[in-house]
Image (tube, rainbow, N blue to C red; front, side, top):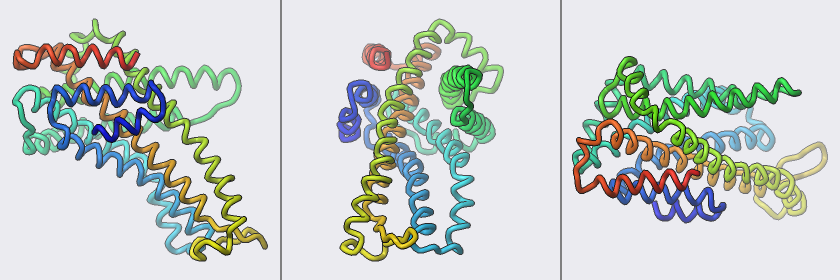
Length: 312
């Protein structure tokens, strides 16, 4: 994960702190390579949505292969809800890994599978609500009322992010139902203000970095388009498109967009990983402190303090 941390550091101090939080967590957990597996799955899942969009653009503007285009468009429509639900399951897997390494000293793969299957409906519910809030946050309304709605949706989404992260931790650590979850949230009340600030801090850091790639999209569309027009006949004909009588090679545009989507997926996946490790560790430290081995408690306390400082 050091390589991922170096990539995050390229996009500013705040984004670099996400990588610092991950390194601090892994220094306590000591499961660098195994935690990389769900992170890699999440990265492939998030990058896949952007790359699927590029395939759709290629089929629509270059090959005009409508028979292959329309099925992929249907896949793209349902991709986001599936992505959000699978992300919830991957978060639960990360949380189980954190719990196992802190309490038992090693990762139990059977326990991960048991957790995912035994809490199928709870995790599906969390993923579905997360998707609905994601859709609501992406909806745009004009005027002052739209501004107020956007603020309300943002606050609700951040509070839900806090509840869902603690909820996943409760499900993983003690197979919590609704009553147990409510009771555990009450126990964590004293930590909610600072933790909510932490959630917002992590999300803003990741959001600022990902917003940089909006410029990458513009560069890909216009800069890549200009290069594709200038060198239309010099680049591979497989990417040549015609807009009226104007030939444009789409390879530069598609390449820049692909790079932008891939880097954005790295940051988004790292943000999810940082929150999963941090909140599971915090949950164990507050609710099940007695189960954490004594030799790990000082390092865990330092890690949580570092995470708090990094997200502020």
